[in-house]
Length: 154
Image (cartoon, rainbow, N blue to C red):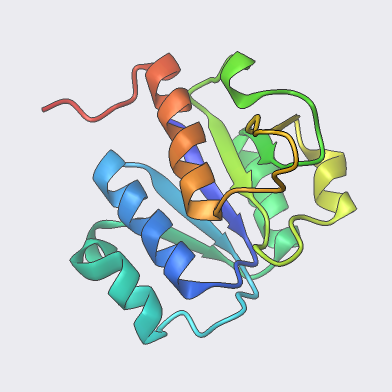
């Protein structure tokens, strides 16, 4: 099943919302530190509500630790970015994909872009820059789960 990775997130409310999304969809989340807030922050708990207890969260000390784990696990890295023309809905997802979202303030550095197996974007109306990271995660995860028949079964 596809997984989500957050590269050094800045905003606890977004992280909490993504953890809630992941818990509801039965998806794992990888948090690549350092985060721009304490992980015990009350805003994170408020956004995640009681879903945080059900979220499968793995913390990685830094990018190097995450990338070593990912390569050993042989998982494909799909970077969600505004710096590409490849639309997310025209991509073929696999069960072992990791959807990587960059920092809200600055995205992902070039070193991350360089190792991504694919870089995907959400098409937007002309003149619009970006969507909220949690909204983006929900949109792309939904398509990945649809393609891989990964939605939870009732």
